[in-house]
Amino acid sequence: MLTPSLIGVVVFLLAPVAAVAVLSFMRWNLISPPAWVGLDNFAAVFANDRFVNSIWVSLTFALLTIPFTVTLGLLLAVGLNRRLPGSSLLRIVYVLPWVCAPLTLGIVWKWVFDPTNGALNAMLGRRVEWLTDLTLAMPSVAFVQVWSTVGYVSLFYLAGLQQIPVAVTEAAKLDGAGQGSPALVDHASAPQPDDVLRHGDQRHRQLPGVRPHLRPHPRRAGRSWPHRRHRLAHLRGGVRVAALRPSRGHGTHPLRGARRHHHPPAAVLPLPAHLRPLMSAADDMSAPAPRTAPAVTGSATEHPTSRRAGSARGARRLADGLTYLFLLAGALIVLGPFLLAVMTSLKSASQFRTSSPLSLPDPVTFENFTALFGDRYDFVVPLAVTAQVVLVLVVTQMISSVLAAYAFAVLDFPGRDALFWVYVSCLMIPAVVTIIPLYSMVAALGWRNTFEGLVVPFLFAGPYAIFLLRENFKMVPQEILDAATLDGAGPVRALTRIMLPMNVPILTTLLLVTVVSQWNNFLWPLIAAPNPEWHVMTVATVSLQTQYEGNWTLVMAASVVALAPLIALFLVFQRRITAAIGVTGVR
Image (cartoon, rainbow, N blue to C red; front, side, top):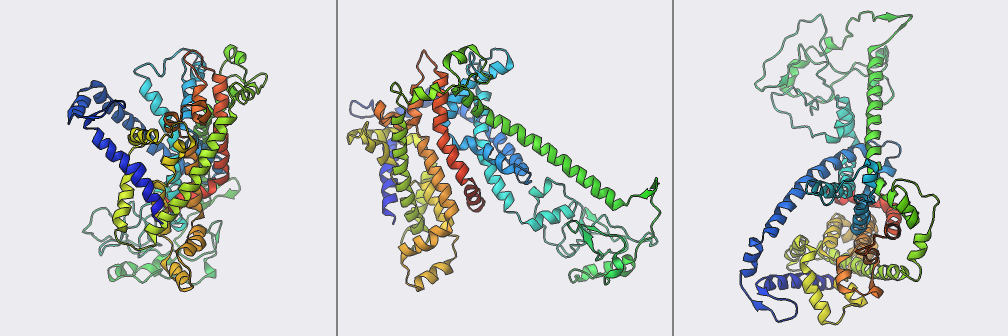
């Protein structure tokens, strides 16, 4: 079961990395034989001012993007977790940039930032060099990075929030937490011998019914006991036990005057010895306190509970309204580039040159799509090549990843854990590191500008897919597998009849991730198959632009064609993806 993935990892990942390590001590121009130079390459690299500057630029870019991505992702997740009407549609909108090809999004944003024909300058009404000005280039690129990843990050936060038990959030609301704070509830700490109630921590394991806002009977003098611990709430004269009454709504607002229909209240749990003196006055406290006549306005009276309930409903409606505004504003920013791309693709070239980028197409024309699939550009070929590459790679990677994950999760063989951590360590290897050795391997085999050169280096599953499936397979109870073994099921039958049906959500997620990554692949097809007959969608889209002609209408039409299948695929499987992230991403 491990053989296919082991071949892929050793031949197409570890061997290229080892080749890079050896070549780093040599001088090689890909034509003449390599010559040993020792550490001269490293000295030349660190003496290069551009390399040192690139390190600082990378650190600056990380500092600009990571805090905003994490913070905005959490805020979006909290807003989407409120289950407001339309939240499912908004979740789809926010994840769209993750599904789409980075190259296609880069082309769209390049047009948005274009100083001459860009949509952003048309909106501002003045010319701004967004990508060439030294003070604006970094923030502009960082904004695009945050825009493209914040929805994907919010999915993990949302999955984590949805794993919080409802009882925990309901208890937090009863303890006075706001509408937004239950999403960040901490667990109640274990009670200490001298603790009664802490300020700010109203969830006590021994007395869940005690609340600090309760007061003793006004005719009792009461007294307080000193505590050795600081910041402890003092209960004056005893503890009031909540009375049992019929309730309305969600059971949080008791009905007035119905207490006579129920038995006297009882303590929820047996009290420890250090709390028993506090309950000496509980019977006295259960008696209703004398009430003063409420203020009368006109001919009606208003109960304090009704006022509190009304103010809570008003605050909840205000919070829902502000959340809607925040989510809708973010959705508009996310959808803006896509809508502009669609609008531009429906304009003629002359209309694009004479009208504002923000204007609607008048009239709507499909001549750009017709030209793409005509004789001149013949986009049918890139579309067919991309579909074939994706189909072959998805099938082979899914099969090899499932087999390897099952072997690591269920089978027992010597060196299993050590070999698995070798796989995991490969996740740290950037893909660009292996490009030159892989190209040399493909060229030596005569696979340049061939279908084999496009697919063979990526036929087998990568470490990420194996790690993802292995963690899910390990969560299947061992008792089920043992029962299957007793029934005579072998490894293959247990995999096909038990493992796969029980892990459909994560398999669907992995399928989508594989399709998206291979559909959006650009660098390797550009290097391995530069001839037009082997162009994939991403390479063909870039080739529409020349040094002297932007062809923005054609490029936007090609971008729409490249994005449409991925968006449709995500709309079909988005519920399974969220469920899979909830199981895998949190654990």
